[in-house]
Amino acid sequence: MRWRSAAVAATLAAAVAGPLGAAFHNHLTKSIPAADEAVAPAPKSIQLWFAEKVEPKFSSITLMTADSAKIALGAVAAGNEPKMLTAEIPSQLAAGKYLVRWRTAGDDGHAVRGTFAFTVK
Ligand SMILES: [Cu+2]
Image 1 (cartoon, rainbow, N blue to C red):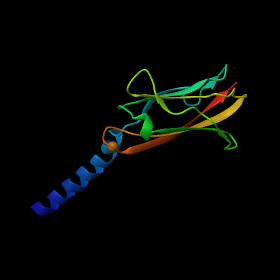
Image 2: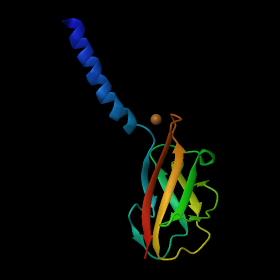
Image 3: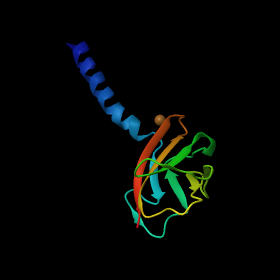
Image 4: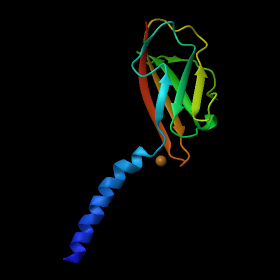
């Protein structure tokens, strides 16, 4: 019966490693505007902070209105910190709801992506 408890242990280990492994991928830690925040005046840039160092050239930030119209942004650039990305918003955002879609990679090379919404009052 020893082989059987080994198999159970391996299954348990795999179950634990899955979610834990995912938690160690790079991820967004903070943003300005923050997720679900209502801001005024309209932001002039999107600023994203990550858990790991990020490379602007392997990253993208997209801004959309609630009806999925894309808003032109400046090129994704490094912020003042190595774990930060920014993109300028050249236009004046009207009041309404917006969606930010970001994509980058962490030190382990895994692509990570996410979306969040904010509102301009
Ligand atoms: Cu990873």
